[in-house]
Each structure stands twice: as structure tokens, then as C-alpha cells.
Length: 101
Image 1 (tube, rainbow, N blue to C red):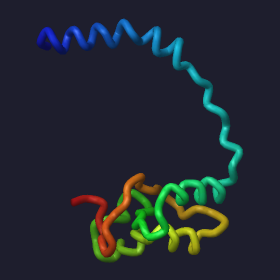
Image 2: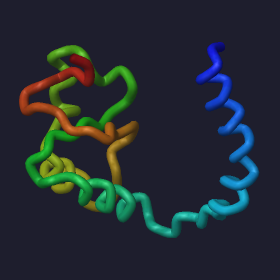
Image 3: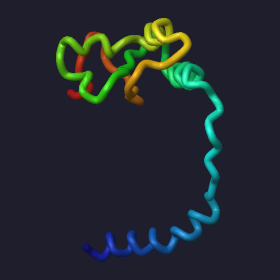
Image 4: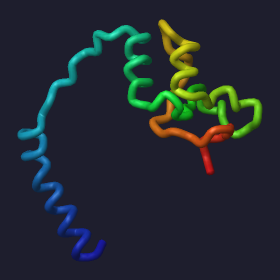
């Protein structure tokens, strides 16, 4: 490790007690229903943003295109609950079926 990297690492180690003290927080349990959580998540996207939802392997093949929908489509399809699986925090181009380049 070079001198600059060692200095940065030492500074970071020295700041840890201050960070843990000055920025400590206690997470609060989420009281929202899964459906409310889902609607809250979708509200972060524009209605026409393409959002992926699915399981880890629901991407990369043409048959996975149904996992890429506009946020408004997801909202209509799942009004009171959320789809099973995961959601990416980013948006995609219309017509894609893969989460990678």
C-alpha cells in the first residue's frame, strides 16, 4: 500500500468513533403494508419509466420482456400487493429484456 493510501486508511480508522457517535441512528420498524411499500417505491419513478421486477434470473432472454414494464403498468397490475422477487433501482430503455448492457 502506498503512502497516500495508508494515510487515507489511517484517517478513516481514526474517524470511525466520531462517525459512529455523531451519526448514530436507530432504524424504526416499517409499519407500512407490503402494498403501501410497493406503491411508495413506484412513486419514485415517472409513470412511463421502464422498471424491472422479478427474480434474479428473470432477465437476459426475450421471454423475460414481461418483467420490464412502465411504472404505471406495474401499479395497475399490482394495486394491493407487490410482485414476487426484486426491483432494480434504475430504469431501462423501452423494449429491453436484459438488465445488462
